[in-house]
Structure formats: C-alpha cells, structure tokens
Image (tube, rainbow, N blue to C red):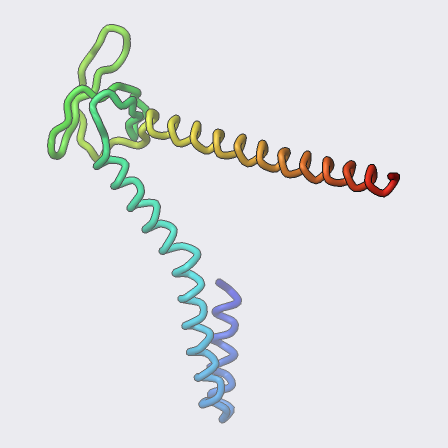
Length: 147
C-alpha cells in the first residue's frame, strides 16, 4: 500500500515539474494493471466459491449429512424452499434451519474425495503399466541384440 502512495506522490511531483502527461498516462496504466491483478487474484475466486456454495445448497437431497455454519452436524430429513429440517444425534432431535446456514455437505464431499482417490490410483496404475511395458521392451531389445 505504501508503494502505491509513493508512486502516486512521485507522479504528482513529476506532474508539478512539467512532465505531467507522460507520468499521468503511466499512472493510469499502472492503476488499470493493479485493478486487473486484484480482480483475478481476489474478486474472481471469491465469486467462484460463492457460486459453488450456492450450487451445493441447491443440490441438497434427503439423507445427506451436512454441517451448519455453527458446527451442528445432522442428516437432512425435509427440504423446503428456503429452509430444511435436519435430524441430529442418536436421540433423533429435529432442527429447522435456513438453507443459507449449510456450510458443507459431508456426503457429497466424501463421494468427491473417493472419486479423486480412485482417479489417482488409476493414474498410478497406468503409469506403472507404461513403465513395465517400457522395461519389457528394453529387455526384449537386449535379448535381440545378444542373438
């Protein structure tokens, strides 16, 4: 933040000394670049996260295990337009909460994690298969060279 203020101060000093046109153009370009960087580093990822959270909340199904913003863990029993009813604990207490209060869907998160792990295992197996084929080709070439 201090560097921006120093650049602005130097731009105003140079403007006072007579090179105002060149420095003001460079200052405007610098501000546009700074805004662009801020957009791609801060604003865009936040909007993407908000969109994913909204999709998660709208795709809740009966039987999903969720965690609320307050840390309450429960299973979805009833879904309405703006609120849901969850069942918590072994004594089956029911709570009515607003849909926006859902923090995570543990059921979907676990499924996604299993899919990621399965994809990693498949990639490792494929890589090991390629490596074994390559080693087999090398062994075959050495046998052919000896014959």
